[in-house]
Amino acid sequence: MNKKLIFLDIDGTLTVPGHNVPPVSAQEAVQKARAAGHRVFLCSGRNCGMLSPLLQYGFDGVIASAGGYIEYKGRVIYDCPMTKDQQARAMAALTRHDICCMLESKDNSYTDEKIKPLLMARVKQDGNSELLRWREQLDRELGIRSIKEYQGEPIYKIVFMCQDKESLSEPVRLLEDEFAFCVQDVDAFGLINGELINRQFNKGLAVRRLCEDLQVSLADTIAFGDSANDLEMIQTAALGICMGNGSQQLKEAADAVCAPVQEDGLYRAFAQYGLL
Image 1 (spheres, rainbow, N blue to C red):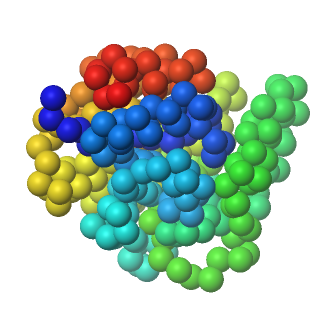
Image 2 (cartoon, one colour):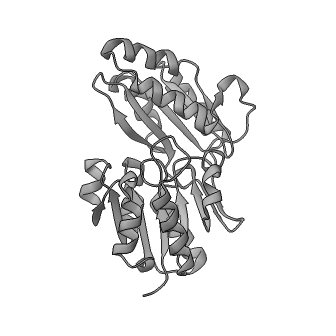
Image 3 (cartoon, rainbow, N blue to C red):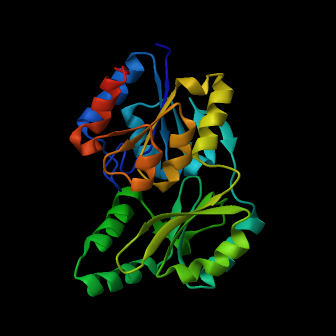
């Protein structure tokens, strides 16, 4: 069997969402695959700063910011932050409709301070603190900072949160030619969580760019993901696998579905496809 390039999303695929420690079985899968001569890459919506705690588990390179930044063994292959004009227009369109935003630079993330009160309001509505726990976990585990600390460094991606689809109507109309609005989740009360991603890149294009740089055929690629921003990656790789906890849309697009990572899904899939 030819040696493969293996692409792993992080949240919901390599780890439980918001965490930085993969299950032992997932760590072993990565180590054994690399020992067998395959190359393993993180391919995440996280920026470099948020995915850096995972590097200790051994990876050959990273695709960060949903494809906006690609690095292989310390060499930068692709680097595409927003222009200042794009950033200004995007933020104006979003904040005009009271949409909460998180700005992601290469190494830092800056969150709108209105996000926590928005989640608190949802907690009061449904009596469930899961949303708030999720947010606090992100702040604690991933080192997200206040937007007041933002010093103007280049931005690759904007995470947004709003209370209804109508709030997004004008931003979509104004920005959709340049940016994809990737909705990650909509809760029972209509709270929308998503990402604004430059159309110059996505995870699928990143897989292609890395293969071209390394002169590896797409036929020798395998990708694992669980959510909407993994769709292009799953469709591009020769074998696209959705985690059992993944979205229905991704399951339908994938070539196969494996068990969730906390149920040793990655290890079992690596073994099934001869990667160990």
